Image 1 (cartoon, rainbow, N blue to C red):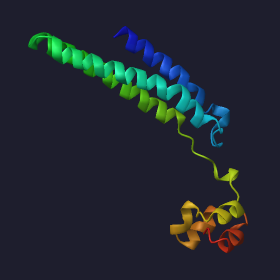
Image 2 (cartoon, one colour; image 1 turned 90 degrees about the horizontal axis):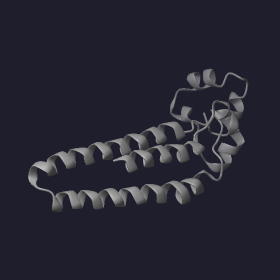
Image 3 (cartoon, rainbow, N blue to C red; image 1 turned 120 degrees about the horizontal axis):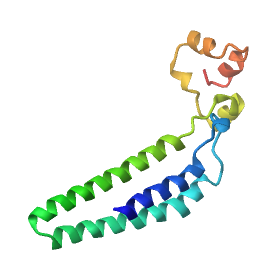
Image 4 (cartoon, one colour; image 1 turned 135 degrees about the horizontal axis):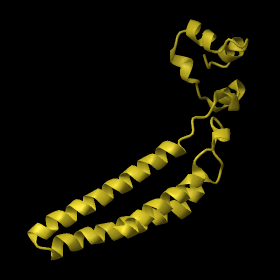
Length: 142
């Protein structure tokens, strides 16, 4: 159990490198984020997943019924802590990119629509009241 708790702490510390700071909120993520996750965090998680699955198999195979129930309960608690740590990492690492980082012409060239495309024109013009509604409409974004 102490090894798993240490692993969770190290995982959250390594994962925190990808969490946006308060000054970066709304900005797009860096290009290296996927590489950091794939080459650093994924092998770390894989090691603990394999170790914990092996531990579970040994618990089921070697222990008597009363000891097994307690041991599997502790194992389930550890697994729950890992799931919660991963959920917390996903929550902190999620970047909501501000619309100011993408222009209307960029979106039109990629064929993507703004989230307001399904809304009425009145609501869309209210959302984009900066005078650029005509540009948004020409591009088919609103």
